[in-house]
Length: 146
Image (cartoon, rainbow, N blue to C red):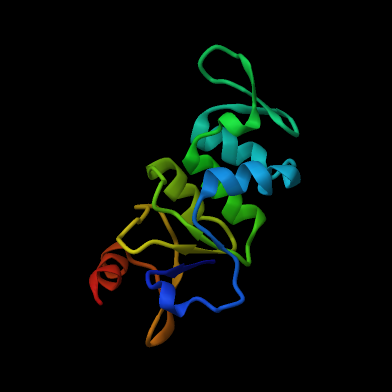
């Protein structure tokens, strides 16, 4: 289940926080790409994973380096491959958010509401501890409270 932070002050001083998803993906996460990435890349960017570091573009079947993935796709892959890190999702579009919210595990952060309409349940973490939310309106309300 995805766990959500909206306040940086709640991060552990020892946690890995990923704010610059493009750079982190290009330098670190790309090294670990395997078959788990195929559906993510296809669902978000419409591209096909051809090799460890190459994709086939949906636009003209051109083979591109994996660093050409969208920021939302890279962010999602950062969450998938770094489930103990807290990943900033502020650069994601709706297609990436839908995939992120349905991952089995991971931590995400954003100071303002970034919510998929399609999710089962998430764990939110705030000054009062953590609790489970399974309703869009309830999650939106949680995000809007200070």
